[in-house]
Amino acid sequence: MIQAGLRAELARCFQPVCSRRSGAAVLLCGQPGIGKTHLAEEVLLHLSCRSLKVHARTSDRALVVALPAARLKPDWAEVVFAQVLRGESVTQLKLRDALAAHLLALAPFVLYLEDLHEVGAERSAFWGDLARVVQKLKGVGLLATSREDQTGFTVLEVPELVPGDSRALLEAEAGVTLPEEAVSWIRGWARGNPL
Image (cartoon, rainbow, N blue to C red; front, side):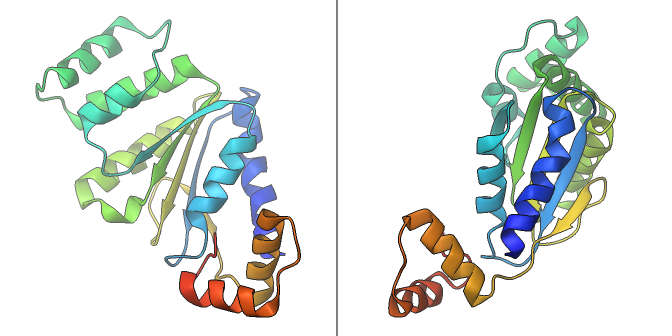
């Protein structure tokens, strides 16, 4: 099954993050409704490190608020986060570096960005820059989903589900064998990943 192989490959990408041997920035790329989000969430659920899911469009302030508290974060990063929380202007470079320092203080940790294709060019460049930095940080991971390729990430293409893959996913989730009529109806209704 294609999804099982991809799941194992994605998990392997983040094992060095969880053991603090290296960093990783991985983009799950593919058409809408083929299971990118489900795959990402399933892999994150089974990793031996903490993670946080945010939408790629999340504002700087909302991102800072959503992040877990980190001990041993550099004072300069605290200053940048405080500026963001007060609504003050902060350069994308300063924010990127402060966010990277915060994620490193949380290590091992994976930040999961959903729907990277929905952001504009400036925000896309910000996430791509963070991806390049994160790959150099031991114990820090960045996982994203998108319908299109993004620079800075290692890209894993998620292929469209074929009927046999849909059936296997549904039956694994349900824990029972499903009648063909049910599988066909669900696949037609979902127009992609049935989960």
